[in-house]
Length: 233
Image: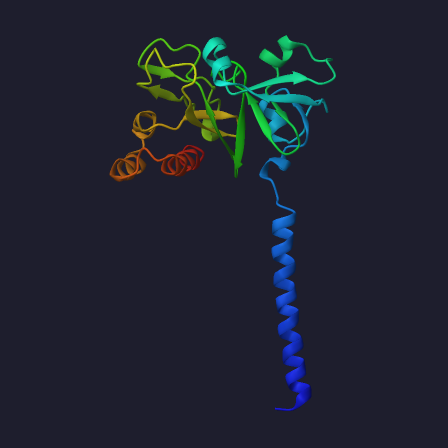
């Protein structure tokens, strides 16, 4: 093999190594946050969140609440206040749907019927995953959870039930939830809830009941996505 051929092979190998190193450095130095898909600002309703179009570009101070504060006052894990003081506490508490810092999205749990204050949400495709307290209107062991399912394709109406979470859960108790962004339908990610939710859909229900990890959040997320696809067919 001639020297020129060997030189060309070495050069090609070096270029490949340089390309791989460049990709590695980009991943390490410039991580892509899923939350950056929600531009910084105030989201007043579900539609603004779906469209990634905040109604205003307000900036907020986000504070992680202490366990003592939560135990005494109740509510979820984050408090939100306006840096400019132009937005009233009442509006922040009851009217805003979500706020984005540009790299993190915080949902207001009050409009969702999940107590007060805010919670950090993680984007997963067309879904938001978050932890929050028990429903504000807890009054039985079987609970309608809120968040109006709305009209679905084909005119089907849906509702989400929550089961057996009890009346006396402590203020710090958190449950995993999933929100489908098309309508902001929300469900609690518990085995009891999904046993009820999937029951009308025989094939899906049967597969779910055969799962060994029915209490796994990952398994519940997967089945909720299948459920949403099924009811939207």
